Length: 314
Ligand code: MRU
Picture 1 (cartoon, rainbow, N blue to C red):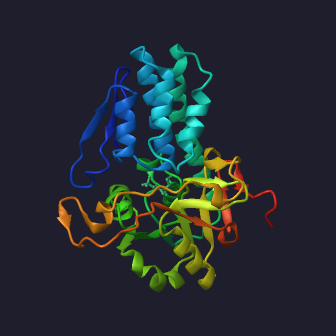
Picture 2: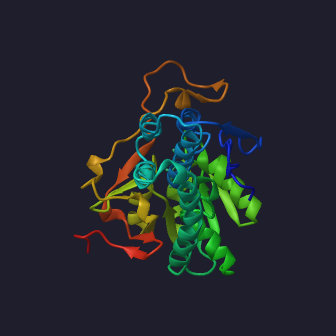
Picture 3: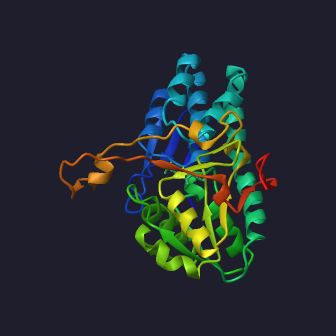
């Protein structure tokens, strides 16, 4: 896949994920403010990708001799749930201004290796020829490259294990339909796009559910794209393993449980329609972007270091 986060030295070029799959165009960021806007407006999204982008945003600000404390604050506030943003900015906190660029590049490059290691761990859990259900977009686009849950799918395919993916469309923002299906088409990996409401019907045919995460609390509760909780409940009902693919940077030891994770509420316009098309009237709308899946519904947390278990977990 073409690079979706590209550091040129003077600018940061982001593949505009709002316009995929129909248009492949970039947004260029020149400072931290433009980078924070790109994160907030979903030009780039997905927890690890947001962290990498924020790191480059700080590096951009350092290059132009800007106010790094203000840049840090602005980037940190751009989206509230994905903890990778905080993780990346904390990692950069004590780095001298002249070394921020090299550290941002290191964060980006390390992420690809982390995903590939996680992919190997996850692929070892899933049999050949499996049907897997996938939610949102956790692929190359959501990370530095390769992907977390979709990275496991890539690793399965690379190992010749011929996975078939049920791609949940992921209302309201359609990351599954627009982004995951596009990535799988590009890779030539067998998949079927389904409406979210089809999940219960296909779940009995699945060997695994694979999802990513935006923040995992110390007790293992998982914040991920809205709809994840429903899939976990379905998986439990049908006895299907429910795997959360979690880079260690997504574990928040400062949040004791899922109740301590802030949930982003997004605009009503995302539910009322899409783009210029509006299909709902003026009813009050709730649009929480994430939900919390209790640790008890998770079969395993797949990380780059192997399987992780919460300290008090079975
Ligand atoms: O709102 P988004 O598109 O940023 O949400 C993304 C997700 O929920 C992903 O599942 C999560 O970030 C993991 S990405 C590897």
